[in-house]
Image (cartoon, rainbow, N blue to C red; front, side, top):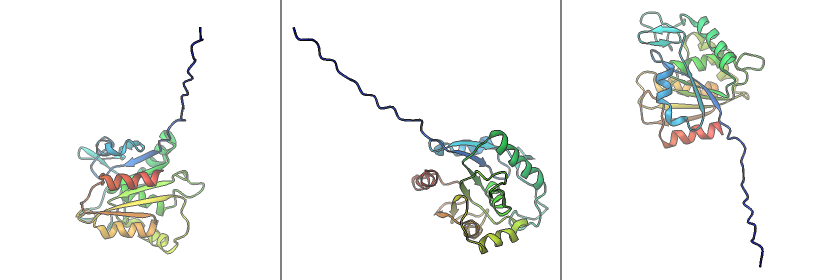
Length: 212
């Protein structure tokens, strides 16, 4: 009687899937929880850590307060800026490491300011940051000079950036976001919408390309 044949089952086990971690910065008057909900379609591509800004504003939070009649791209001062800077450094230390940062609206302006002030340079607190996503950004008013210096020095950056620009944005005019993109470098994704984080197929593909 012939012995039964032994069948070998080969199982290919892949290593753990790398999921980049993004620190996510919400807009003025919003919160980490609201941004987390908005970014759900992006959660398959990155681990999203959405934190609250340190300054209460209405039912939400702000990264700084503004003098009456000023906007973040016109004001000469961000009231509460030092607290915000310390807050970001503390979050980076306590909840990191992070592979990148995503900022929307006031959060994107904050992200531009952090770059302009050199927070991501070698030896600085956020030096490990490698990916930036700026949605609906504008030039930070108090740091226009530093942004101009960045634009004048288009050398190699330690990060890759993606800027999303809504052509119908009536909160932070699109020309401001384009100016930030020119200063920081990186790719620009323009879309027909307004002041929002684009999450259509084209945008998700752009995020995937940046983070891969």
